[in-house]
Length: 319
Image 1 (cartoon, rainbow, N blue to C red):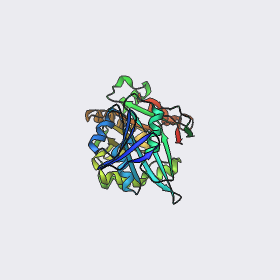
Image 2: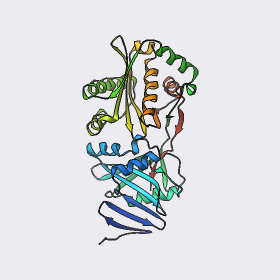
Image 3: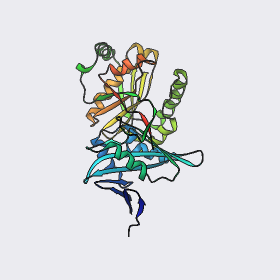
Image 4: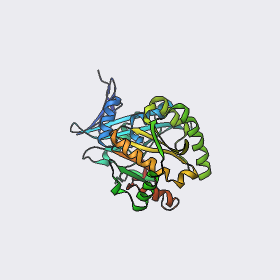
């Protein structure tokens, strides 16, 4: 028999797979969905990597906690939210929902965030942060970090959407007798790729997801890591690693030699990725963050594909 737990305005009851909280016409189900059901809902929202089941599974495998919420209004799913949790300072629990919640229907968004914060099944004391997909107006949300912009490319795409210089460079690459290869990334190729990426991050002064994250993803779901290489006369000119998650994908790691830049090999890799992923049912690729002030060249390269600049909402503290 369910055991009620009293919170003002809410009624929570335990269930075999999680628990449910009812707030008038809105319900929240924590850890109540199987992976296949979560991913089906995430596909409806074209969910980014950080709200995919595998992302949470990797976090858990590396020692963190994950809780997933499905919010319903009048019986229909209106939002999803995956929260990653770590202990900080030996006592408090920090919960972060990056690019969450995902919105699937009309609802009072501030109310959904409050529902998530108040019912999150993590011990107290806890801190709840959301990096929102869109700004939400509420006096109970305190901005903590400014929004970031990403280059998002819908698929399928065609040559007509490429910027002129980008298209001309691609045609040059296509006429240079280059060889492209798109495969699931083997373990033997992943280790040196990550070593080179670590050196590249130091040399170019940027940070990305840790190598342990990529290795753990590969251990859990190796087919999701897609490796594309471009070579000429048996010499590798450029390499890129993509992470595929449902009907979306992420441009994760890229490396190009001076000879590869001469032949515009990186453009050929992206064009190959666009075509191959589209054929595999991928509807959107995240080409990563863009910073027109500090990295204008990289921003032009990404946006030259015809990708759209998508600005997320701020990171907020829910109180």
